[in-house]
Image (cartoon, rainbow, N blue to C red; front, side, top):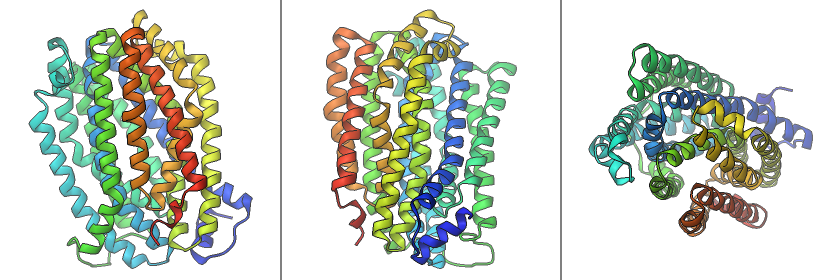
Length: 454
């Protein structure tokens, strides 16, 4: 039985067996996992390309990396505020309302991306110094940040179109396009970094070019080719309406605030690492890139959980919603536990691929082995959050994440870094991720998250 038929079972209120539920989760997860892994490999290769330019180039990108993640998170929050509504309407078989939300999302998210781009231009000159960077890497860091910021419109549209397709149950097209984007990114980066000799600037331009092509294709498959959401031959207003915008704000604002404060926390973490020296900054940045190989499968499963929970909520199937949520989280924990074991074993080899500098490899490998122990509970936090997003329950999980990050990780990171340096920072990270996973599991099994929109 095809996935589309099983998704139709959800919308029609029919019963699914445990095997059918697990098949849905796995089949929807696999394309997203492959796309997430390919994206991670892209960053992995990008970082390796820059890493071979020297520790200063690596440190320059590493310094502003967390700030670019913050901007990406703010864009994603806006996208999901609309995409979750689309999933609920599709689950209720109300495709016209789903397309009404889609039209308004295009206008609102485009406006939001322009605001973020303007902010990047305003702050890029001083940002490296605010983050504690030294003058020898500030210029490259500033240039990289502003170019990535200006490409924010492409990132926003890629994310919006991909989220809409995924919430309709179409995981294959956005996943295939994201894999294509990774290949394009590597090719463009090689061209701009090495062939044209543009260094750090070339890394930003290559990524922006790949994102532009992907955004155009993603929008084509959404607006022209999608069976459920295509706007071709279906006229309607693009003007934002109060009910849709208010619901998008209700869902997306807590996520946006979470991304903002979590991003700020990541920036504070970077400030904590910065005084430890250029080697520590580079090792921290490259180790974060390597670690993402571990947690990207979790995000792939979380995306599937968001789709399934969203449509189940829209169809009014509360018992099915909980069952799919529990199965998704269990699968995420199993996969990321295995990834954590592999990361622990091969940490030195992975870091050696990223940098030829022995000191960077040594510090990065030790950090990765510390982090490996946190992967099971990190998986719980990631997939549970995907479940809660699908239900439109974003406020309390955001508060929980913020308390965990600011109250546990940063406090411990500052304290432990005084004596243990970079290893202290990563120990704090591992403790906090374990704590966050535990409290998210508690909410999953004991909370009323699947009644939040009643």
